[in-house]
Image (tube, rainbow, N blue to C red; front, side, top):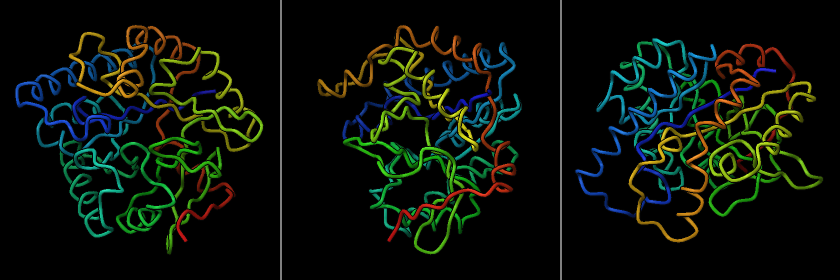
Length: 289
């Protein structure tokens, strides 16, 4: 089974754990350079395994580093939207969110020269409280979302959402939803798709999540990573103890683990599954009341 390797591309200083940190200009520029270098390492590694992936990118990068966006698209990968500058959906009104998405998609399309049809919210921040975002995304021409994480977490999650692809409904509209992979343990969904879980948990947990997806009739094992997770030498941000642990644990072994996963599964782009899923009868799940 080919999994869906996805990469959320934002400079390290833009992560949610550092949202209130005022990063000095010189450090911000260094993080941008390191993001470029790590993303290019990812491109080389994916090419080595003949893998194609989806890169969810903040639109700001299309303005500051359009060459990187073009190079990702030219290598055969999908460019998708990760907002303009990595602010959670909770920080927006529907009108402001629409402007943010529209601005980001336009910048990414101009840099890549290809349509942008997928979206993932920063920090998986499409939840019940922000379910109206589904309507905005559908109205802006987005074909699929990958923001609703069916887990319990202090920053995100919709625990009762489906674990496999479905039609997510907002107040008026609906979209195809590709949820990140989880490992089902009875009534509990263990997050196993990537990020800190990829670096902290034994690799067997992610393999078990993919194996469960393989047994599902509409299987799509969606995994996610960030370029900064493959940069063990980067300067660490001044985070609290818990955030520092979640952010930096296991980075030294991330490159080797990614290579092992690519060798085992290969990778497809999410956009390549859209037509197939749209021809399939999928369950529906209402997110917004």
